[in-house]
Length: 378
Length: 80
Image 1 (tube, rainbow over the protein chains, first blue to last red):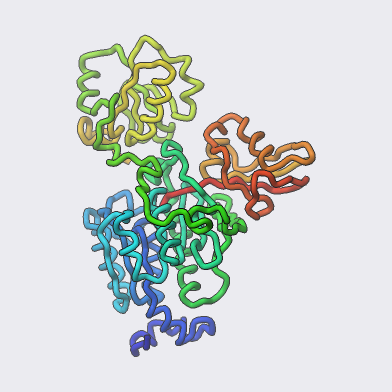
Image 2 (tube, rainbow over the protein chains, first blue to last red):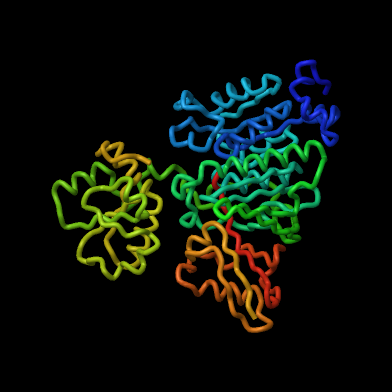
């Protein structure tokens, strides 16, 4: 795809690189890259791919910019809080590089739409934040024969690789099945260093450009492990698993229900009511009228320092099994955490041990929304 | 023989450290090393068959270990 005068000037530092040059830049312009997720990883990936001149960037996201996103999602600014991420992204990319054509899909990627959305793109960049969409993205990439430029993050650590190429392994070769949902903290639950998705997302952008150019040695058959705290990078050699149901035996011939596969409940826990839940309003009523129950906070001590419900006792989830013997078995227990997910796990454990337990639906976040706005949200 | 174990992300969190060394009988396999690790406090949350690399190369559980080997135990992470 020929370059205009403006583009020749804009990309001059690429054009003088022997490995890119005019032919390479034209390939970059002709490329179509789909970013699944316009969050922590998608932000730096989108910005650098746009700056580099990728002709068409597709973006899949259904979220609205939130104040807590800004610490790491550099595609979105303070003025964009409350706007759909895709609108914010479109404006930012247009300002960064008006030569980029942005195609947006304001939806969750699902088994029903994934193949259609991905079909017209050359490369898929996985910047999602949950296992269900990662398995979906992987399986769809394998079925369509499109490379999956993978990145993921947790606290101070990240992973990156290039999956589903003609000879390399896919995500399932490494991780054949998802971990049980109660062992999976999200960024919201587990925290993440803001710069970390920058580190990993720019690695994804780099790999994407190398694939477009056919240059260098992409992370095919290698899993890069990034530890920002120690600032150590490990590379693990991995190869295709002949038994892999996606890319090995090819047993997976159609997309499945990935939420069910990963054990994700149908709706977000904040707004559903499970048996054994109490709502914040019900808890407020209980506190006003009764003193025969124990309020148990199963978060971590640093979260307790940020916000707590008065009268609660702190027993972090990890120490609960050991602390159970000190709990009064004659009293009912109400457990809470930040959003209601960890406390649901705690409630299960306590029920198995014979306690009568209720879980605060939506956690301290919904307590702050519905009952006590003086309790800060984090 | 002694092997070094590197733990990543949530696995380091549940065991409270990022690395440890194991004394194993000669002829021990990756499976033996994992059993050893899984008997440590906190490790009941580790999956039965995590992704393991020996000397930076993917390894199956029946892989026989040698003195000085470095094991990496790698969790899936999903954040983005």
